[in-house]
Image (tube, rainbow, N blue to C red):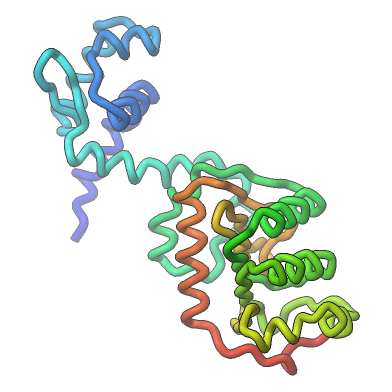
Length: 265
């Protein structure tokens, strides 16, 4: 059973902007008290008081030559702070959005998304989506509830140049009229037969992912339960992209074979 008394005490030690800054400075490299005092324009006495608190809490340890470094416990705490930081910075966003059917193992890693920017507006989201397609050389992986026609031609051009394409779509996806004719004309089905394009299906897509080997975009659901195409978290950060890739792999493994007859224009 969790001991919330001990846990609450740790939160109390972290409830200081200065102490959090110190922790993340020491995460980069050991440092002296005087160095950080000058960096944050805080009196040596105030910095010393904060250092003493963190030493007593086993977050940091004093080394030779008056250098301080993180303990193993302190290093682990820093990895968890990113989750609080991401959720805190996007508190307003999550008033109107949720995590849908996201498995808890991904929610526990939500801090991996912290180094990202929110792209707002349908046109800006589509432009960012195009950017991910255009900059892909090795692969493009998607989890989608909608398939904008204007992106299909761009995707097919990349695949013809050798980019691998994997696509997961919702059974109740919003399919634009004329999609089938466009796919036939573009050579999509020939690429499908050659296995340069792979497709699978999920009963319901609540979280959308678009990623390549360099960057990724992520869309959480709004109150409708479907991915909100009006806003997207985008990043070229490795941790962000790895989170998206792991979620894509999870969905790919639990998805069903693609069945064209389930899609309706």
